[in-house]
Image (tube, rainbow over all chains, first blue to last red):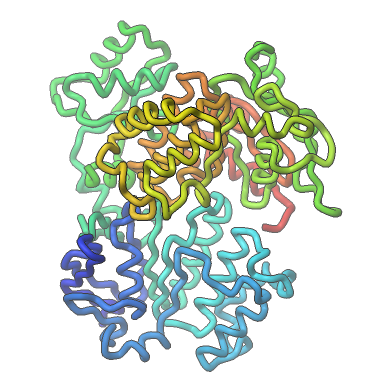
Length: 301
Length: 255
């Protein structure tokens, strides 16, 4: 059985259509990523699946339970970490955790094994108020609270926004361990390097999925001619490449620019000598393999 | 690091600190940091959560008094002339940028007024700003109904509306999608071309590559400072992500 099954789900806020007949499945034990810009409908989808909001049209089930009729049963089985920190700021670390355990009719002791890895670094701050924690610690506490009732499906709405690269890496290692314990995880993120770590990802835009595939499949289905370009003066290089006939798109990617080339006759060496004639130095032009971020940029056009 | 500084001409320095330190009780949040930033430079200020970036930035903006050490920003002493510092800088962050319950034009009007621009200047510059951002149709839109990426672009333009010498950006692209992040950085490039110094924090390591120079803070100290190219050579790695891992993993301070 699929852990989540969504069929033609729609939701509007006034004139704005947040979700447009969205359909997809998440398999049991899967780590499913939802990637898309702000306003694409990610949070609305999370709220409907966690039974905090009613859909307008369509149906959805979580663990075979209907999000409208069986909302009480679903709430016992899912964990939700909203994008905005929503624990009780004036309760201590310890109080927050035992509060959430009590709400679900369990105790911290009973499920401590599940949160141990995540909660341990917080032990020494357990008497500190949640509002006084640093960003990384808040995130660990929020995840602990979302897990303390041993949910079978975990929803994480941008858990790593504003988190530094080292802590992000730790966080994803924790997700990997939770997945091994059989928990189904649905996670949204603006970081493309995290998207690659999911089993499958759905790229969402304006309330619809543009595609749902494994990261490998998404990368393999990229068929543009993609080159990296580097020179000493990157900002003038950017505007000159955008004006160059035969180049479809040009964006910064770390220390190079990625360009998609429409003109199949164009060779990297030709472009290189053109740029050198324009006065650029240290010019490099070479074909590259697309990354997930390149795929996203192409689909988002 | 010395190599990079020796190339800087003294008359173009807009931020300079000397052993700048901030302690809270027995905790040293910022530990004797010394560096210089020049006019028009895009300076990336990196570090793990809790490394001391925000505290350092608050001192540079004249919002927090150093425990010891000195600093000048836009030619003013951050301890003794903090009001003059505030007038000559712009600031935006991911958390606070614009007033959600005001319309687009009202936000611009408010900030223009706070920085002492005349009605006429505000009116002219508002038109130009909305035109350049392609925001003409959003003049009367409530800021809360703008998508995050639009908000951040608008917030940045408002932060440099009074043409400050320096703009401080605290995680301006946090949570923003890849397309909008790049558009945002193109605004940063433009500001830098106009001679505005951009002092920026980010957790996106591809953005670190876009900076002219980058500093990395670990446990309150600046552990590395140079161009991305030299830093990568120095650590023998291919990306800023790897440079960051190398340094930040040595952190002792619990986050």
